[in-house]
Length: 602
Image (cartoon, rainbow, N blue to C red; front, side):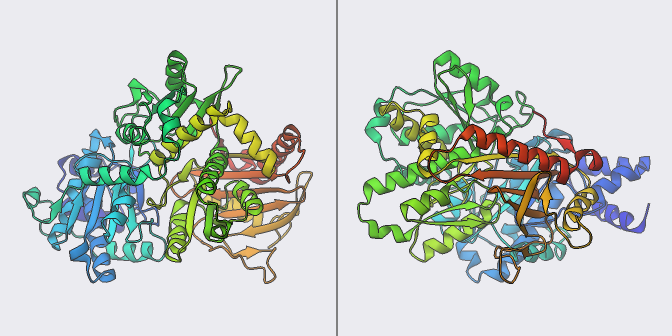
């Protein structure tokens, strides 16, 4: 074994007090299994703006008790430097239902472990005693005016993964340079503090508070302010099915329906209780489409329900499906539901605010890879629309800035089925989105309209926005880099492509290098990041396509859209044109055979 691996494993044997992970490392050393040791100890998990996300297991590249201690010690020290009133204000910590029996790791145990470093520095701590949806975390930070929040969750990742997600005192996810500062502080605090493994530290501490009951009560009080048609909800004949996909959303969504005076939605019995094995689905992610919703379709057909609401396991995302007249189920894309919710929240605001001068302070946001439909609505209706980089950390932080300037942020969304409908949570919230979607469907039903019909009406009024997104799987970082470098040197050195098959390219923005040929100085306006790949191509036919790497999964994603002005567009013709454009991008830019990329499993 090389010296570096020797040093890392020797420290591990000294510091790890979990018998399961400790024994597994001893066994790997005894077996001389260098390949597996390299996987476990080759590189420490990188703390990014999304925090940590990795498989549970032994080693510095995995989520486990020791890496949780190290991360929390570093985070503690970083917070001490940032906040002079840290000890008075404190932090909140919460967890989802994930578990990994082979390593003894689970979210609840990780929560117990991460409480201790905060006690060592005498910090006030709010720790939820029961599993909670992720949106409860940023809500609590704002509601209790805390310095930070930590959520132990891996959202909709595969079952072996877990994660460590951090919110700042403004209620939004952290952005740079906090991630670099926290990373450095972790490196400076790797050795467990004397009481780091001592469970007796937690007994009866006056610093520890459980905010579960009070936060749940106040969250639903705040949510009630976004109920616009209580009498419609009481009397609606529309039936709903809800699935929490073996996650933590069930109780909160039931309570949200109650807060809006709805009858409770039918819960998919096999999926309503938390189960870290996710036994009924291949991927616990409703974004993956109809496969995740098979049991929901069956229950909805049985109970004559017309709408399905599906949360991901930590309940920050939402998918919606509607039974069509043909008997088929239509699962709305994130962009389609974004159009519906954006239209609904603006329409509802307009009903209550007849004073049009207030429009100048109304804002909606979406990420740069999401549909531009909100831009089209904003242009016609006279409110502001802004685009941010991909991810809710950007939208949450921008929303906070706007709110601090006295603006009203009505809505923000990203195509990955994430929606911020109520700015008391500055992150995506699948609970509020579920009940607001239910009210929208119930209101439309009083006009004999379905969600699908209303979506079509939105496109007719504001212009068709046809989108298509997918991904290829690639586990090799070297291959990914080569693919993107090939695009930057397509026609010889430093020349981006001028065409893609038969489609002429009219503009290029590269947010990895900071190049944007639409700007006079050729410099991109949006922030750039050398650590992730992202190139956007604008085509002469009005199409836009972005290729980017994922921060949390081994995927190269693409997003494409064709926008038509309002009027008599032929959506079928637009779809055909977009499909041809996407095929050309896959063939000429991704080159899956050359780079050995695995397509998304349908």
